[in-house]
Length: 83
Length: 200
Image 1 (spheres, rainbow over the protein chains, first blue to last red):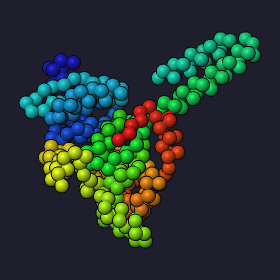
Image 2 (image 1 turned 60 degrees about the vertical axis):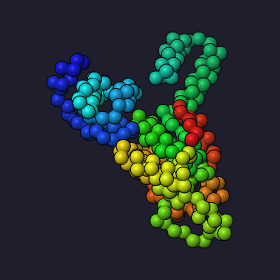
Image 3 (image 1 turned 90 degrees about the horizontal axis):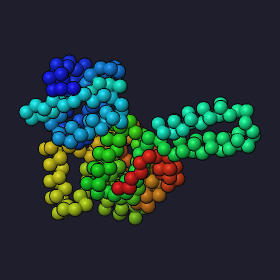
């Protein structure tokens, strides 16, 4: 998905993991994914650089669809669709 | 996934050849038994020996464990030797220890908050500094990681022999939802069926 498309998305669930370090964002994502239905969209906010590599890997394993990253000034927004 | 495909393939072969001779059926049964063994041997599971009682190594062990649990892997930790000291609850007092047990109890750290760094401990300065840094960088503390691990269903198996050797009693361990005292056989059985095995 392009950045514009991602920005236009409305997430069913937003996880704010900004400020936490590894494995904080991953654990936060794991906890929050249980609260949404299959096919719904989740957005993860993270200021941890490693998260940008970790979340796509996690999605691959868990078979969620990783949609992409939108970079903000001091953090990233990661989007995925629950399998 | 791989084993599933093999199984599917075998079933297909089986239906195609039911009218073939007995010898073939025998071979098929053998093969199926072997595939069953392979399937059993590759659970999506992480087994880890946590041997070290060093703060840094325990942090690494718990980050890997909680991460693996987030990956929906079954996680089984085997705490042995110096690592068992990290599971002591400083608030719990137990009596009835012999002299050596008391000595060990005094000299070994009483719980996760008292562990030292493997390098640069510098009489406590280094370890205090790393704890301060972790707080500042919002890395979860070791006791917090234990709590998270418990919530995620990470199993902690504590080596009975180590506990006995150091004079630790089960009553002085932290309240952890999935903890049991066991021996090497439990670890070996768990490790044999795990995809990932680690030693820290």
